[in-house]
Length: 139
Image (cartoon, rainbow, N blue to C red; front, side, top):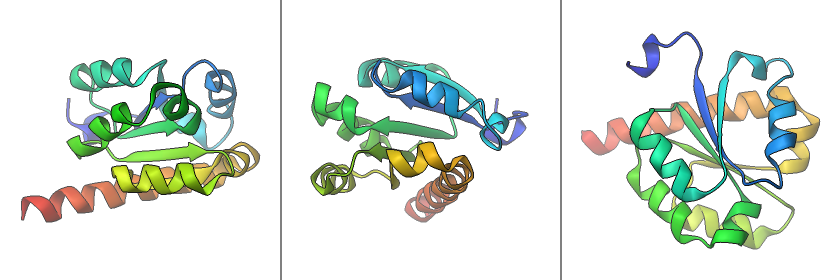
């Protein structure tokens, strides 16, 4: 089913067990209830799910990147079919590494947790930016 034909945009959250509960609680708040959220406990599971169920956005976390290494995130980013929002702690090194790997946007966890409307806006912007990049590459 094309992404635009679905009633709600779909997000896949590759968080690992450390943050999955927090993110699940966050998506129970407005305006994030408008999103259909699915979670993955690893980058490998995220790859599998994306191959079988297209998503509008992938959320990846710094905790998962630290636990599994950056190769899984690099593989997901190089596919360029699903924009990636990176949620991280307050260390610039994680953000710079994620940007080098090809993520679309980033946001600190503290801001995402404290301001669901900000997370919602960043997610929408990441989708638009990702779609624009795909269109540009095809052209």
